Image 1 (spheres, rainbow, N blue to C red):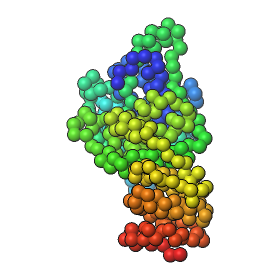
Image 2: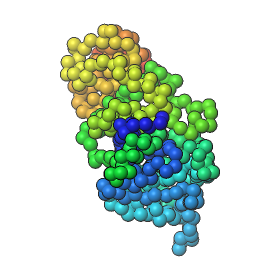
Image 3: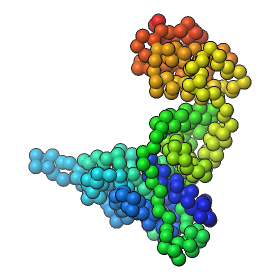
Image 4: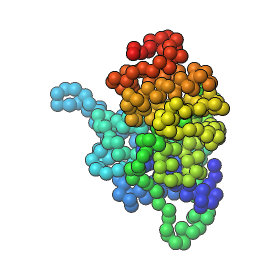
Length: 376
């Protein structure tokens, strides 16, 4: 997507800042000389430490660790200087992999472990490190390579360009927009759980969208849906809503995780939902009414009930959740409720001393088949 106005530019900035703050790896795609590096390094003005690496200047051992012989005669993978500096910094920091599309496939593969496991040789990076990469499209990159699908799938992909409106103004004023970063936000865990419930509900209705590997090499080098990127999408959508980000930035983030077409379908599905509050249902389970709700929406409601019980488990709330599942099954059938009931009766979810309500009998065949039929 070509960014043409200042408003669109600020939406992309907002999306990048959310990825950095939520510590989800993000990859900026854009032509050379349009300010990607300068924007990321502007985080230093807000107290972040930034380590910038032009990836093609390094070797795979600079990401996987250099084998060295220890005094005891063993071998350990010594971390490079950039990783040591990140680990030594006490505050928040960014590892910025610049010119990422010029990295050979071997270099790309070596970078995977730091991105997902925070491991560089024998050194484990702190959770305060965020990963950002920047790349030119392969057709304009110097000796560019297409990203392999396993590498691409570890990033949120955002298109970057510098519109004339921004460049012309800032060239004169010298006041260039910086990267907006965010401190820890309130209610993030609860918002994330709610978004994960929505993702689970959407994928139950559209199971084919759980994992879709594109057919062409260039598409495999960008955003596509997998369980990993759906998790990214939920976390970033929750973070965006928690900090009051624009709807456009949220759309960019979800599209950057699972692809624009899938993101559009997901957001359209979410916008059509009009569901009861799970806490309200648990407060008055006897008056819950599932009439008129489609099966996929019932599934989302019950998943929300499950999340509420897990967040605040009591014997009474657990039993009420089982009753709600039974009430829903009586209206739309047991299929949307069975996954939730199975989760409720598993060890660690059912509170000690919680008695099993008689309504669970409707699920007895399904629970017995899974070996989860609970005792009283």
